[in-house]
Every structure is written in structure tokens, then in C-alpha cells.
Length: 451
Image (cartoon, rainbow, N blue to C red; front, top):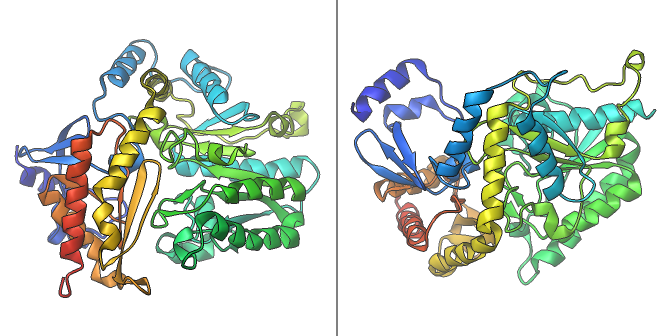
């Protein structure tokens, strides 16, 4: 079978996500036959290094033998059963493990299907908590500018990236937006910590003015991933936890993209030494195998829903595949790898190698920023380095880098003018060099005057 055969079949029936389908009149879709480790292979034998972990989900490589075995074993006994009135060992075991590894106080686990669904659960649960505790005026949420929390309506309501939300604004909840602590915007000679502290005054003011009507603040710890991989200092989270306590407002940590080691610690919240009231988990939770998400919360919040049936205080939210046994088993296998292989410790060397591999770009005339938090590294292309003037989005410079990288056997999927690395943790130094060289060459080509 040839790539063209699959492409023709695909274009006759499929509508791809986050895609202008007309592009595929000239930009070929790449059908993948198999994956192994960090590599994907198409139907004609071309290989691609998966530098973005297939949309940030794959932690330990494609066709990982340990996760494969766990999935196969589970398939032999139970694939799925409803989690209302029933239970199963993988769901219980995974909940126990998540309680043991997440920040203190997150003692209850509510399963959902994917990241956006987890955010919806957290938003509804926070709103419902205040209803159950006699504070019905709390109906709003505070979000950061440049934030992204998913593409269902509730998740979009607490997101701020216009590319994803602008069209749907008439359908969205009214929320309060606070300027992001994004350190790309800091003044020259201002440290990340100082800038993050300065930016917190906006959040303090918003909470002071709106606490009585606010359910929760929702935040992506340390990295605003879909918001062009913009990053900030952990001190912002420390200050935010303190302020949420003072104003009696919930804190929702969306760790869907940054959890499970991406920031250099198992969870981004750890670097600030905080425990949120809700923690949303997905993506890497199953090692990139199956859709599964979890919302961690506190015993106090759980108890606000615990009552006699006739009082109608239960949290009546459900998904058909809640706590799916196959998904829970792959998640348990993923957590086993973290424990056995000392992944967080080993990633320190990989992150250091990524930084050194792109060292030359610090002096590139059209790279305005080289930033990194743990295993996430981002390179921001600009038309003017001194003023950090962005290239017009219509020029699609990032797409040129994507096309060049594919020719070099590397899958990069830029966010506008931002090229980023978020590879599986089993990547080798030589593979990092290949990934970096493809990005460096691609940026050189894409930033030429007539590119």
C-alpha cells in the first residue's frame, strides 16, 4: 500500500482537527503505518522523529513493551464496565496511586475521558460546591490572558487564545481575564521571578474586587502550552495559592499538558510547593495510549456533595467511558515506568542536552527568545530581534519550518512563529541533535528575507 492510496481515502471521508482542510490540496497528509520508540513510519518507509509526542501525550515511546503488556493483560479480563454503582481494580489502584503522588490534600479522584472533559468537571464541581455550601452568588471564574484549557464550551470560556475562542464568544460564559505573567513580555534586565511578582498585582486586584462572585481561578502551572509555549516563574503560583486562601476562592491547576514530568518535576505545582483545590490530569496519564483524564480534589470539597439522596446535592456528571479499565491499566503501567526508571532524574540530562543543542540560536537575528522549562523548549521567531516584532501570522513562517523538518525526518508542529520541542522521555542525545538541527536549519530557511 502506498501513501497516496491512504491519502485519497482519507480526504474523501475525514475532517481533521485543528486544520484548514483546503491546505491539503498542496500539503500532503502523512499516513502512519507504525510507530516504535520516538519514531513514526509511513507506508513508504519514511521515518519521522516524534518531537512533539503526538500532541504532548506520548511519554515513553510508541509501542512501549511494558504498556503493551499491561493493555494485553487487561483486555483478557475486562475492557470496560460502568462506574456508577460498579467498580474495578484498575480504577481503584490508579486512584490510590494518583492520591499518593499528587500534592498533599488531593485525596479524591473523579475520572473523565479527556483534558477538556476534566476541565469541565472541575468548573462544574467548583460552581456546584458553592451552591451546596450556601453561596449561590459565586458563578464566575478568573482566567489568565493567553490561556488555553480545551475546546468544549466551558473550557473555552476560561481560555483566552482568540484563535480557538473568538468565533464562539456568543456561546461562552462571562469570565474575568487577568494579564498573564508570561515572562517573554518582561522588560530587559528583569528576571523571571521579578516579572512574575510584578504581574501578580493584577490577579490580587481581580480577586479583591470579585472574590464574592468568583468560584475559582484556573491556571496552567508554569507553561501556557497552546499559548505559544509562554512560561513564567513558580513564585506566581505561590502567591496565587496564598491569595486564593485569603479570598476563599478555589484554585484549579490544569496540569493536563504540563503534568507527568514535562516541567522537570512530576507536576508543575510542585515547584511552587502548593496544593491546588482541583488538579486536572490527562494527556501523558496513559503514556499516549488511550483517552483518560482525572480530576483530583480535596476531602472537604467531596464532603460538600455527600448527603442523603433526597437533598439532591450529588454531583450528577458522567461520561460513558468514565474510569475505563483499559485506560486505567495503561496509566498504571505508565506510573510504574516513572518509578522503576527514575525518569524525572534522567530527564535533567536530556533537558540540559536540548538546551546545549540550540545554544547557537541565542544569537540568531530572527530568534527573539529561547526559553525552557524542564522537557519543554521553545524558540520564538521574530522579524526584529531588538523590538521582538512578530512576523505577520499570514506569512506562516512556522509552516516552513514544519515542511523542512519533515524532509529531515523530524515531526515538528509549530505554534505560529514558535518552534518547540516536547519529545518522549526515551529520546537519546543523538536524536535530540537531529531534532535541533532540523529546527535550526528550518528557522534559517523560514527567516530569510523572501521566505
